[in-house]
Image (tube, rainbow, N blue to C red):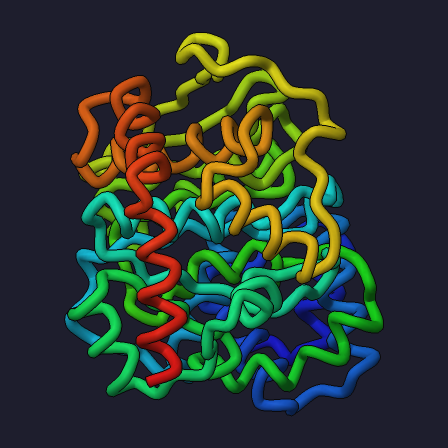
Length: 338
């Protein structure tokens, strides 16, 4: 087995690590067997080379060995992005999770506080009044009773606190951005995963295939968003029953107007919470609502609530108009604090 500096040397020479080598390297990083400078050198060199499938999968295996996993909910759904897309959108995947649950899907929303963005899902949900620190028993009750719960990443992957400061010091995207959505604490088999770069779509899909996902979309909106967008074409790699295929969809084809980039920009957690409430109350329409409908429709399609995206948009919209989606948010606020 190579030592850690050998791994760094290999990466700098452009040589990919094997799955086992990557797993071993991340074991050393997470167990703090190497110093901060070595970790920074490793992560930045890996980013520069480009992380391959075996390197990503090896890292996933390393982290999962040390994770707190909740069993019995692998049939649930998660919508989660890598972050790091630098577009400044409001929390689209978070409101998508609420609407999807309101339409009958069990949603275990995995997320964190902001790392490189202004507002992470944990920040905005806290602002909305949701207790993000439920223990395992209450999470299980929450999923069983209201079909929706938030899983705060640090509570399930406490080992990752060992790299939190290093990530801040690096201040740029690293493999850890890619890993977040691949580490669902309930090991859910259906997901929409947004990625910050269209070039990593297929690599993330191949890792998901190794993780035996049932039906997942890995998406890049207009080659710049880590979610589906109404600003342009959406690039998707679908993994379904062990088969991988590439798709492209445009929101124009489903009766949604094309948006400008500025239309989807959010702000801090307070502003984003107001946007989420405004959409759910029916007070905000237009581009912000449309992009949410597109993402929710895709989630409903993956979960067989809708036969296609067009009917998914109608179902998602009806959940807002009827008040069901707002009720689901209020249920989560009440249940998480009871």
